[in-house]
Length: 432
Ligand SMILES: Cc1ncc(COP(=O)(O)O)c(C=O)c1O
Image (cartoon, rainbow, N blue to C red):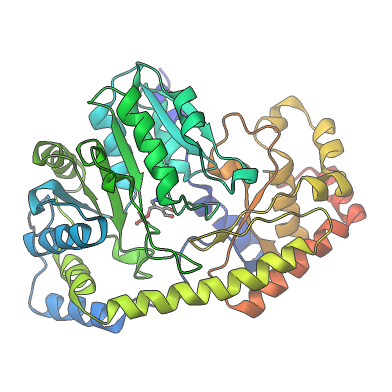
């Protein structure tokens, strides 16, 4: 009898949480690491949110509450969605979760039978791919290409749709690429979905970066395209928009109250409910008129950093970086750098059992961390299926500008360090 169930072997993970011990190991040896691996804004949550949380704890608002989310928060979310997406949803269609993450796995469990197909973006948030095989569904990878600034055309999506397509996951602005679709592109995708998919197919539109958007654009949701409101789950939350990742408040707006209740039942099974004092803070975040300008200022800060750091990256020999339209990530192509440094040759020398756990961008990531003290994420951390020939890194720009510049200089130095790289690979430790 084995200790772990078979399905435990096929769930993935989020490597952003796994790289922490490696960073700690490097720092324990006495050298500081420039951390460009973090998926959270380097801001503090607004004062009015914190004050409301504290006030509610003092009011003893710290008991079990509605597993679907407290009504004032669900009403505020419905109001916000109606105002920004031009929809007509009500609080019964809203379900609140501990963060934006749980509804990803819940959606897969609630809508998909074994054998159903899930179309998901790659590169994409790792939890999309992680769950698919775990629940017995079939992954259909929607590869987002650099040449299209990591967006997808209606024609490309159409090729992936089949009679078994049950769930289509979209995420704009995107983690890890910062890719943003235009309203026209979303209308094209919607046309294909409305044309080709069963009415029971669902689109899971992860819009958690909706308020971090650049170049004077506004956020568009596929749910706003007529007809799509009946098929779309809008997911968002407070982790990114309000720099409040530890508050653990996210939500989904479902096409029907019946579907929202299915998600509520998952909450009951897993968490019972979400801390009510934090939900009070989230309600305040949506209602306080100071929140809009606060978010706009944070987004402007990210935009300024983006402009400086994209240029710096493009000046490094062997790196090519697109300009993202939102979120707080850069996703440079490092194929040229890997070639120059001998990473592809080094891959060829690894044993089979090591090769399956690593990739050229992973080797470079680990070398950059252990030998040049800069932490970034590799391509495989954002979906592994079908990515053998794709060589990218994710840099988070949620760090001050001096650290960001220092980080890019360290990556450039790592790219020039052929001797150090050979030594690192020969040592054979920390290769993934
Ligand atoms: C695209 C995307 N969706 C969902 C989440 C999960 O957010 P939360 O921390 O609120 O669970 C993240 C976090 O990085 C994300 O990047």
